[in-house]
Amino acid sequence: MENFKKEIAGLLSPHLEMSEEEIFKNLELPKRLDQGDLAFPCFRLAATMKKSPALIADELAGKIASEKYEARNIGPYLNFFIDRKILAETVINDILDKKVTYGSSDEGENKPVIIEYSSANISKELHFGHIRGIMIGSSLYKITNFLGYKGIAINHLGDYGINFGKIITAFMHWGNKEHIEEVGVRGLLELYVKFNKASETDPKYMEEARHWFYKLEEEKDPEALELWKWFKDVSLKEYNRVYKIIGCHFDSFDGEAFYSDMMPAVRQELLDKNLIVVDEGAEIIDLSDENLPNIIVTTSQGTSLYITRDIAAAIYRKNHYDFYRNCYIVGSEQRLHFNQLKAILKKMGYDWYQQCEHIDHGLVMMEGGKISSRDGDNIFLEDVINTAIERTRNIIEEKNPGLENKDEIARQVGLGALAYRELSNNRVKDYSFNWDEAISFEGETGPYLQYTNVRCHSLLEKGAYEEGAFDGSYLREESSKELVWELGLFPSSIRAAFEKMEPALLSRYLMGLAKLFNKFYSQVTILTEDKEERAAKLALVRAVSLTLETGMGLINMEAPKKM
Ligand code: ARG
Image 1 (cartoon, helix red, strand yellow):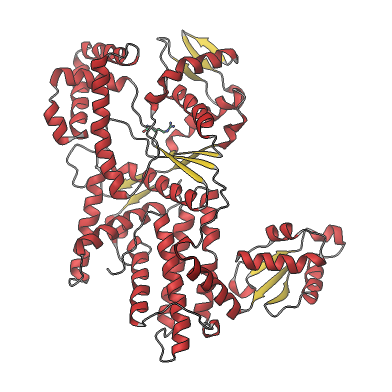
Image 2 (cartoon, protein in one colour):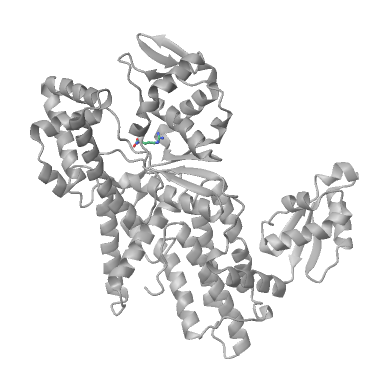
């Protein structure tokens, strides 16, 4: 589509007092396919040209004659109809040439874009609720890099705070190293639960916890530090296992503790900039002129808080990465926190506060409550993943018992189902997860997308597809025209997903493409006797498959060739 836009801008510009670039920017996609392929709005010209937009469009249509483009005036728009044969050949050949790079770009010019996601709290398990942020962040990171930006994935670990004092205390009383090594984070969680129980009846435990936290943070006591490091290792070992299964990557695990040494400097800067008010011994920032509640940045005991570490982290990230966008993929419940953070950065005089974006998301709940949870109310993410794979394995056994590599394909499809389920909803929406809905091979699901691609592969195999020139005039049915047109929109759907940091725009694009393909498949005979005709249709099938595979990769889905 881009090339066509450029050419049309070139055709129009001699007739208008507008640069090609400006015309390019103004070209839109018509709402409906029968209204053409590109539309140029003439409203804005009316004032300077002193004519009605419809008349301008009509006159322009008369002046622009080309074999490739038919220009027609539709209301206040000048609409262009691209010759179907040329459109099909251009779009499909572009995809066949570029293959897995179709839709990618260097427009990001290597500008650094931080995608902070997952940001797990050490010593706590990854539970089902975490899947949303992990899927969104991992997808956005891939999309960011695909567009030529330099993605930086940061896991801002929650590895600081009084909780560590509590767990050290519990470990000292009841801990068993071997047990924890064996069961992992669950063992730390048990300690945490024990601590809470014990401290309900005896205040001495809380005192001890404060003491350990002090030793850890202020005295850098070797024993406390070693335990803290070990808790972190135990937790990360488990997180990394889950991250690896999902296929997500992090460039940095700099968490809250990483910034603790920077606290005095941040405090000093806030004091120097006259932003601190002392209230009952605590230091607060007044945010009333930003219509936000005031916030404590240093407690009366002199310790820093969550927000203080985020101030330090933002400044550090600006200095260290010089980000173009700094995106926090964090649930909507922290909206106030991020609004306050941005307001503080603004007050500190950092105009780049505007480049800090809270990419918020809603909650996911498990319909019907618990599943196979081994521990209390929490549903472990790893259990959900395993269940997804197991359920998929059962469906395969039922539908296609003769399939080779059933375990591997069950893994790809089960995970794909979870990924699509998370990414097809607008990220801000809450929703409840239902197993049958997610894993089904029919309806708007991950397996449906994957199955569509499998169908492409089996056609290519049956028709003995060979790469080479083809004649686009064979793609004349309505359903193949629609499909070609949709294929041309892939790059812009990726770009839109990046701009809005919304993977759903890409997920839904892919679903639309898959549906159009299946319509084409049911209406058109693809494997015709006529060799030339078959070659053209298979070229289209191949282009669909390449696009689906690339797109699925960007939303954390793998693409099996059989299922
Ligand atoms: N660890 C926090 C939590 O689980 C999320 C951290 C979000 N990121 C940040 N920069 N504050 O609630």
